Amino acid sequence: MSGTAQKTDVVIVGAGFTGLSAALELQRAGLDFLVLEARDRVGGRVEAMRNGLGELIDSGGQFLCQDMPQLMALAKTRGKTFVETYVEGEFITHPGMSPARAERTYQASVAIRERMNRIEPDDPSIAGLSVAAWLDGQHDDADSKAAFRSLVEGLWCLAADKVPLWYLIDNDRRITNEVFELQYFLRDTMQSLADDLAADLDGRLRLNEAATRIERGPEGVQVTTASGIIVKASEVLVALPPATAAKLDFAPALPAALARELSVWESGAVIKILVRYARPFWRERELSGMVMWRDLPGLFACDGSKDADHAALIVFVGGPLALRWHLLGEAALRAEVTARLVSALGPDAADMLDFSQRDWTNDRWSGGAYSDLIVDLTARDAERIILAGAPPIHFAASEVSPSFPGYVEGAIVAGRLAAGKVQAALQSAIATRASGS
Image (cartoon, rainbow, N blue to C red; front, side):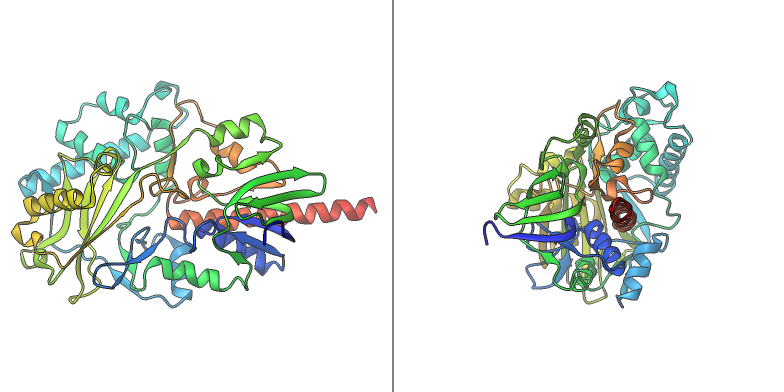
């Protein structure tokens, strides 16, 4: 179909939850659109795969909680079954601490996070400070600082010395859950929810169509894909992480300020592992299955069992540790993780039914981790400039969402807001043409 030209009102580039949510809003508004997705599936950083036992598992974004209203409502509307994450029992820190000391360390790390978030992002006293530099200047004990740093590198998946303090404050303030963010997951995987949304698009989705070039002209915009398909539209919504969006070829070039602000983001690194067991042996010892390794910032495990017959631990490797372990072969990575689980939970942890890993580091289409982060200390206007876009080219991503940036919840919100902007732009154009005639 090389050279084939199509026409529509809006082209949406990317079929993650941002693109899918925007598409459904445009569909409800009666607008014509086409979604172009580079992968052979929808969902973006949400993904399902078969493990060695033939079971369908979440290999990407998975968890949600009751304080994520859009995602919760969407999953309920689509009839999804919620599995409550098992959290009863003792939380393990490794190397080991007494329960009292572990509790004090955890509470102290929470206090550091709360203290950080009381600082105004535009406070001149923190200009030029990275998270690591600020943390070094705090008077907390070493264990508490290590726990906080592990939290940062595990959740945001970049080294703390790369992340501007003002950015982390602004980002973290928008993550507003008061209950545990790993409260639930979906029995049929989060990917099944993305698939349900895609199924409602009435054939206006093209998989395996990577947009490569976006051209603006007097008649609107033209999007060209790697396979040679050309789509002409009035508006384009680029629903990609900023670092991925920056790789597109724009003609003419984007305004200098916008191009710069798209370039200040870096994708984090994460490896997600699901280990299946014959039984949840940790529960027999009154352990929750949650483990935080103090000596390996960014390494965390939790119970991922769907039920008593599906015992599992999920292991997250984030940030600099993921970059180091990314270089290991599969067998060496399994040996590393197995050794860490055994040291924390005992010899039963080595008796695995299956070990499945998904290394998201340097992923071709989504960059790497849960989210891109700003790594330029001076890029304070990046989100505002990206959201302003260069009409008729608009940008949206979970990263620039007003709530839960970097989460599926944030992607849904970002997509719906972007659809409203695109719809308003189309209506304005129609009104302008009508007044001119």
